[in-house]
Length: 523
Image 1 (cartoon, rainbow, N blue to C red):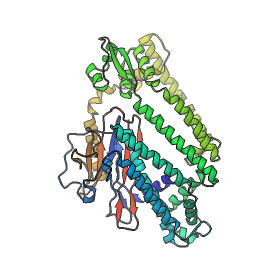
Image 2: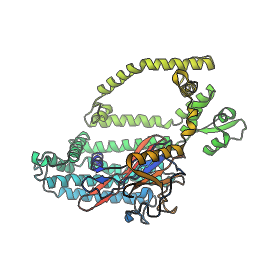
Image 3: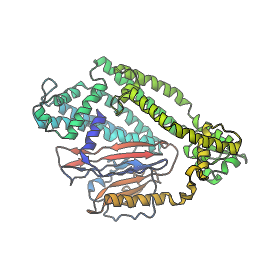
Image 4: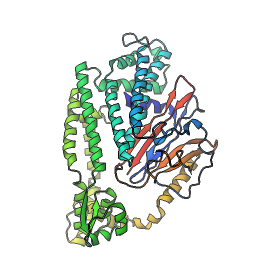
């Protein structure tokens, strides 16, 4: 239910938003979308993606971003969310969200219609859909922020309370997905007379249809006992997924390797800044399972033994996830069969473009045939290159990055040396180019802005995070903010991902808007 309502909220607005990706970073974008009917009312949309500062970006004046004074109060907290100023606030905000959502549920039940008595007016249809949307908004505004925080915040207490809030609200979402009363009210709109349905907007109709499909796919048709079992299984799955991701992020493993081999690729002072060097031996250094370190060694080291050691170290550094993955696989299959699917793959694909496993299999098989000749040609290039270096043509997994780079650098088959263009693609140059692109395409300036908390509050969750305002050229209006968090660090999410912090939502009984936040990560 929550996902469908989120789609509805996002579809209601013409949104100006930007997402920038960069290794192991987390930049947050705030962009204000506009309602089609009320373009003068803004919604803040934020996103968290990976980034860093650019010295050439100019700083805003003191007036920049002051269009909405209510957003600049002393209570502004993490991700610019009001009253999220200390870790335990996640718990109180989660409890408040469930109370507010329950209030909307009660208001919905008070509307005099049901599946046996469909709505008869457009007003009641819209009121029902927007109350369903309001329930989703209350929950998503906190659970999405909690999901982002537990993946990026450097402070363990913040991550711990965010995880608790996420778990609380995940359980509550399970209750919503099994609420027959909500489903009954939705059906009263879906089954309304064509004269009523024809007056709904395209977005309202899509939200209504997708939400009903999602309710039914998630087992709303089951008995109370069966729905309770489904909710329990979903809870177990959510916890296992969280544990799997947490193990990858927080379980760092270390290994000592030959100092000379490693430091030919990564200077000792650089390695020391990334990994504590506790080894007292002069001929050994310590590396971690960090992707940046391992990938650098795999790509640039000519030593096959070092590449092998680094590859095996990185890919065997989280053995505890083998058990977690097996339990997760079993629970997902159990959930699918409880809901009437023959497998989790069938359930997962049921609302996707492919539709079923057969289509996916045919697509992958067809693609495999099409690329087979190219794969053979490239594999022969790799084999020839390795034979020239090592007198062996067997390509092992840890050989591919090194020999691929070697072939490109020697301009074989039209390749090129990437080091020739690297000086032109520094972070600063790339972001300057992005700034120019955004201004030319969208008429929006990107300018450096001080944090609202002035270093005393939690908005800036790490000292390397920077804040960029998006200013519309024509009006001078502050459309939103980008938080740039480029650099890798301990306990930070290590894979590419996109997190929504908070969706925008029109307050339909008032001339105002609630904030909209988003978070995008790419590592």
